[in-house]
Length: 236
Image (cartoon, rainbow, N blue to C red; front, side):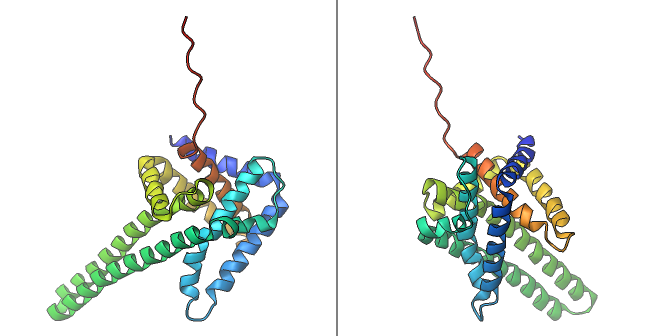
């Protein structure tokens, strides 16, 4: 249901309020790690997408700890590293391969259009090249959105339910497509919240990141977590 998107974010906010100081410190560590990976020479561009599911799983696991009443610690961010490092890194590797594939397809479309436009020449060639580049960007955007759907629940599924990486990505995509309207509304809400969070020099992201982790947990629980069966009706 579309109203679920707001409920997920509300749950994330409530979980943040249970341990705000630790959440802020944990998010700081997360950002510092990603920044450090990003400046690694040569491989930094690849290290961030590969490592991100590992850290995202730690954030979701932290939200689950808070939900269950445990005391949150900063090192809970590394729960994914302790328990499912291999599978979570595989999710990250598939993430990287997906981005590269989308970029390659878009570049091939745009590049072929530019080459054809150069051969045709004049105004027709310019229009053809421009249209081809724009179409390539559209294709990249569509592929990237599909990849994000496959990644959205994958860390939680690997971390909380021990699902294999490719299966987790497939289940994640199916869940997003199955509740497409809800996730469109959720994405719009996140888009607005990110802009709001960036206004005070980006400091709002220290709050928004834990809230998103809690929202992911709430969405995972709605869509994947098994619910207890109702007791069988008694017959006379």
